[in-house]
Length: 483
Picture (tube, rainbow, N blue to C red):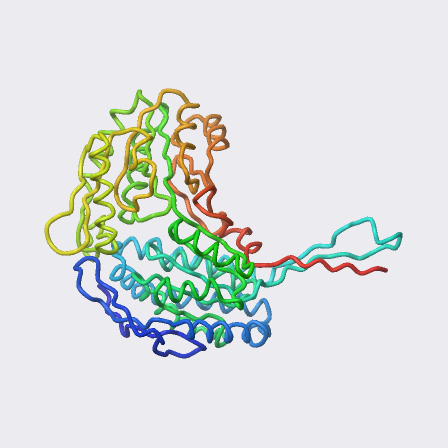
């Protein structure tokens, strides 16, 4: 574990560090269950102050920064994140339980990649000249401008805080918005350290503010505040619905990346070694605490037994333990409530007749651990329909391509899907038929700053990343000059 020089636990408000008007809350170390830190909690009054400061920066100091300089500031922040990569990975691991190696090799580099990608966009956010039929016989010169939306609230989940914040923060800043970040109660520390780097990089005060706090207080105040023009939220479908209702009061724009129950379809022509390894990654990666977790595994009946046996072996090969032990491949769940939720789903699976192939228990000792779990079952089981957000997968047989597609689409969620096949035609045909915002072929959940990300149905509305991230953080203004 890398030593963390200073643990920041205050609000980063108006360019300064200050206590919260709602007191403090305790965050726990999920590997031990012991208190980790007392963190300042933002009140409704703190939110109001932050919105006013962000609005002033939007029209003032941040607006005055030329586009190319905005890009340079994002690049400088990326440099600082790389410098403090070990510290950030350590904080992420301490706070939410991910193995520190995973935080260091994926979550922090993904944040850097998002910052650098959108740094390149900062001086390329252009409108276009629009040919039209004129105005009552007079010719016109018409064009569009892409302008910042305004003050944006970025509400970040606890399962990959830095990575997902990067998806929201980088395009919002590149397009000239100001941002108020609300971290999750269970994982605020890495984002608070990032705030020190934002300060060090030289962003004008008020451009980015970080307000840790409780969802029903801080999050709700941001969603309801009339000065916030957009809410970008990643988290549960239940909370997303509440944010959408609250945002409707004053017609805020929203981007909502919500839950998932992603299918993985393994056809009989798939490279089984790769498919089993990838399917296991989709179930157990980050303790299964992933919106895109591929926990419904549809295996062609010809390869069903091989897939089931392979996933059993993959589950039993996981090393569950201390996130800072180099041998560990799976850490604890984020808190006791999440552990009990996951174990509750395991019991539901058993009660409804699913066959428990392996796992399904909480190891003895401290911390919020659950053993990697594989069921054999059917698509109508609760464990195959609802998001568990833990290391639990269900393997389901199918016989025909059309049956696999129908089973995969028979769910309320539509975030992601994976297709395992060596038939190129089948890959394209099945990908087109799946109801999902992103489909990976022969690879589970490929992510890159250049690729749009978001879901359908109960998995949310809107997109992040790629050029879609530019569109999602700007408004189109039409200007028509009658000549």
